[in-house]
View 1 (tube, rainbow, N blue to C red):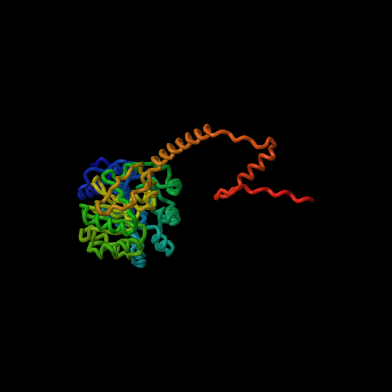
View 2 (cartoon, rainbow, N blue to C red):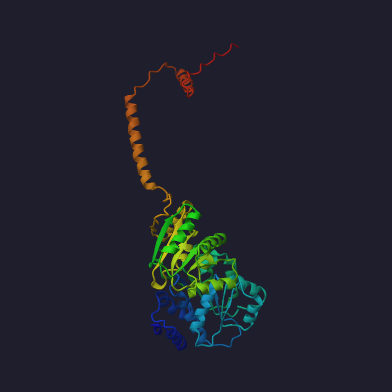
Amino acid sequence: MFDQFALHERLLKAVAELKFAEPTPVQVAAIPPALEGRDLRVTAQTGSGKTAAFVLPMLNRLIRDAQPRVDVRALILLPTRELAQQTLKEVERFSQFTFIKSAIVTGGEDFKVQAALLRKVPDILIGTPGRLIEHLNAGNLILRDVEILVLDEADRMLDMGFAEDVQRLVGECDKRQQTLLFSATSGGAALRDMTAKVLDDPLHLQLNRVSELNEGTRQQIITAEDSDHKERLVHWLLANETYQKAVIFTNTRAQADRLYGRLVAEGVKVYVLHGEKDQKDRKQAIQRVKEGGVKVLVATDVAARGLDIEGLDLVINFDMPRSGDEYVHRIGRTGRAGAEGLAISLICHNDWNLMSSIERYLKQRFEHRVIKGLKGSYMGPKNLKASGKAAGTKKKKDDKKKVGEKKAKKPAKPTSKRPGNAKREAAASSVVSGDGLAPLKRKKPAAS
């Protein structure tokens, strides 16, 4: 129960109102040290409840140290608009019985309206790095009194090229008393470098290993010849699989639009979501899928983070993601909170090596699946181990054959005891054409 934590009674009331019964593992691990004021570095899978793990301690601190609202007291940085909007809703739900005010600042919204919002000085500001930097440059944003800084999905922010913006925003919060860094993956060298720079004596909480992610999700691959073959496979899967809602991921906006057009032409109710869509269209697409008016969403990786849709139980990778971390975030849309899901990746010959590297990263083997009537001729590369063994056997046989031939063959008698003559004869005998012509005769040197 949540009353095991030293949370303010108003927060416990909100938790009870929302019918949050048992805290998740990440909440059990992160909330107590966060309440103590420790800096945290938390790795926990998508859908594990990590938003509440930092929102509840943050709200508890702001309630406990109530002050007149003159500056932003808490800042939450996130990589995408969708994730920022989702986090705002969580903050508002947990703070419903308090006087704490929150606001959101992301791209795609009216800049002047946001500037007016910032003049009201919310207690908690939620935003994406790019737009926050714009307001900082315009003089609309003051962060010198921020007490708590949260970097959520920090690995994704670095992947999207926000490293410099994040570092600058962190630098503006130079009086902060606590920093919490959350991610779904362990990230690489860039994330380790950021952790070292922004956290002070942090407690590291590894709530999962990559190989344990989405245990309730079956992971399959289906081989395909080309993009046209993949499109036919997608149509078959949407027509024959049992699912409530599905998302299909592509690597490019152009491919997302093309697939969307093909599915619409075939009578599938579908929305498309990518970076070129304006904020109004993106909100409408997500809302329609959430409400169930549309069951299928085609998206680029802009939707891989912060897309929280109940009942999303089918993920199709039309294009294989470019990294193991991206794969984790894509399939993290399904099989959430213990539910079952299905993730299917469509693999052409040029996807195979990438797929294999992701298998190694996850320390898992994907289930191979064949759809009758749509089976392609490409079934993956030949088994290199088996072919290598066969080649080794053949080599041994050839070696034995050569040894036998050498033993059976008698050595040729030398035609001359002089080394010079032997060399000249060897050179002469080597000058023979493929037609079996006789050796060329050496010309006698002309008299001097």
